[in-house]
Image 1 (cartoon, rainbow, N blue to C red):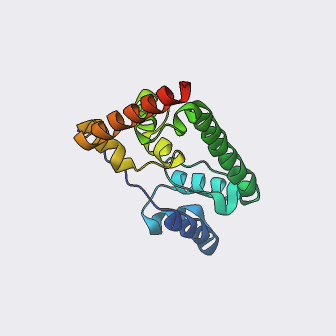
Image 2 (image 1 turned 30 degrees about the vertical axis):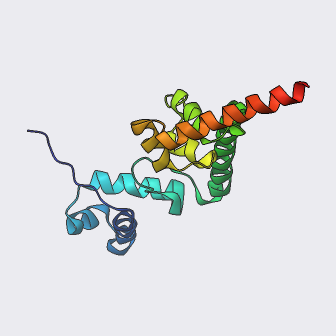
Length: 160
């Protein structure tokens, strides 16, 4: 049977570190909270190093509050670079309508997040999935054929 580990939130950890100062000893604070003193010692070291940036939660990077602005700017830079890359690849499809944009998204599903591409290309996420599931509707097929007929008539009379 797997051992279940208890997780503590940021507020609990910050209060626990504060309790060390009140009790004057690490062991007394650990006994009162019912946790190991080694865990409390680790939390105190982390709090001394990162301050309010300590204990961000699972999946988040720890950073000192002074570095928060740099961290946020790097995040925005990465998002902008991804946006540019998607727009650059999708540029030939953008003027051709939603159906071609849907095709682009389907071709690049493994490279980028579908939700991110739909957001950047301003296409509805639900509409894309409906298109992917159902394909082109009868009305859209008729409209596409009608447009092709109009183009051929236009070019036919333009030659004269």
